[in-house]
Image (cartoon, rainbow, N blue to C red; front, side, top):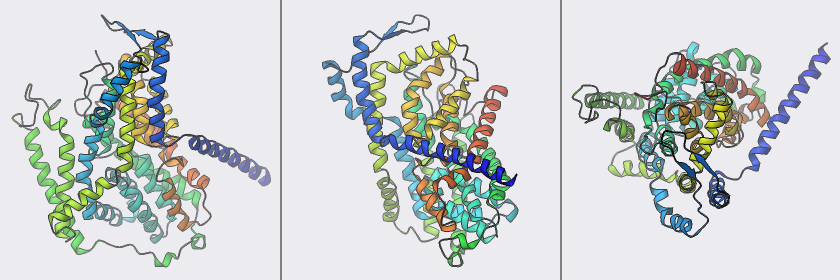
Length: 521
């Protein structure tokens, strides 16, 4: 019986390994995302010429709608439009400016040491009984600061678990799940919100040129999701992953674990955190005065409401301020930042890390612009919406397939902005035509895009996580790490999707600040 069970287990592992090998092989077939966007932009030009030649078109189903035909870019007029629009496509791409401005503030907070100290304080001061919850929660919150969670929190969590006599890989897995599988969730509006909102706005404009999606579009849902992810991550770690890992044997380590030291917060760092926290509260109070009272100067000047107000439209400005000022206060108290030059260096350093992103945006902006010019987005959306109506798939269940599709694509194209820039121009207009608001569509996308980050070798930080894991288990491989993280992906996919359907369709709650659930032309 034992041999039979062992053989069956080996067979299952073999099938799982082959599946992982297939995913990795498919992912490796894809070119770099920048190359991918360049090829897509060229493909749109060629395809527009072919489709225009054959008269591809679609009837706008809205009242008074006209026939929408493909506009060819493979002719003299198309070439003129491409040449004259190349620069403005790039500079006018909404996510570019919003991300750059937001990261200027984040750069100050990161360079001063505020974000690192806050994470260390949250995790290291947690009671042993809730340390897992603190690790996963810190991981979710850390995604506001880009790579900080991967670089600081994941190694720190492994060390903390080992110091508590627990398996270090369980700590690594818990932190990794929060940072990466819970990527879109957060308590505050972060840099990813304006990035995705800008892409969604461009896609929605294919149907409604005046439609605007703000960075706050998914705030309520993502705030609640933060706690769900923390609870689910804690459950998976303590009930599934840690028991499976078993008791840790220090002989498995590739480093001398006795030399590992967890640096506690110094008195100066604690004073810095208190000063930064106080400045954050003061900023919050001042901002509240501009938006909470009916006479708030940043309310919508036309109707006095929060929706469409300068406050929400300028939320990126407040992201910059609420990171920059507490970051500077912390830096002054800890003497990391003494002059204006230190602040300038911090902002410059944050910009220097965005070289790859800026190149990516250049080609993504061309693809999105070309796709819009050709009318491909509108035509695909109309035909896709017509198909969904014909097969009767217009209810909330359509989001099940949409989330699963996003999760699968994410296995091979790990960048959130890259994947959304490709899929949004098709699926946002399509689902708008069957009645769903772009904000809800974006929220569903963020679930699928997040949950499989931790099980794909295509994720940019996967190699770093594997290297950290190898410190504690010298013979660990890609398959072992993915198998460890797979329960998180499954649990997050199921639990997060259920929350989405309950929140949006059962309770009828808005996913963001005064955002609609359904789209009415």
